Image 1 (cartoon, rainbow, N blue to C red):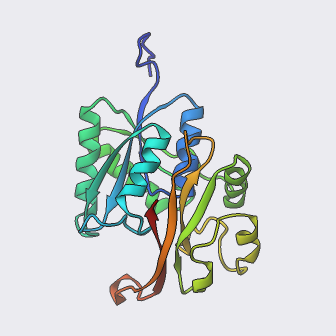
Image 2 (image 1 turned 180 degrees about the vertical axis):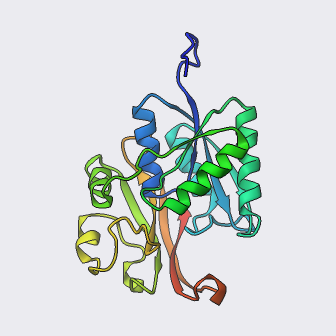
Length: 232
């Protein structure tokens, strides 16, 4: 890639943003490598009321984007329309001069293959800054950098309700059962990052109620616990 001597000297990038630790560390590393993070994109449920998988309200994700110095774009989608909506938002970014898409995936090849496919269709270059590194090493890096996160969702197949709503810290990791990955890469838990070196200011929130959700059989039929967060 030829770097032009103008104010656009850095590759212009977006982040596929869940609000959690992996996408945050990927953003941090991409910035450290010289990329300009212009935009975050986040999938919401059909109602637009909370983010897919993590269950975080849009106001708090917007507050993350503001603290990170990036513009925010949401798209409401069902799982059925997810891919076409994702490609459309990538194409819109490409039209705005964004050339790279940052993803926080670590080692799940089906995820990487899907990301390469949708980016190819949109004419954007995928970038996976965490790819193929030891999961525990990435978690330790995230914490040692000073990022702070809260566990907002747990899969009851792996973890009890008491893990939901806890700080994501060394004690949380020490308390995990042996079969649970420190990154939650198998879907055991999800996080919401609220402070750290990439943030201009912490995201203010408070814990609301916990909610139980029974997934339909076609999605595995597991019980999930969500720690609802609200702005303060």
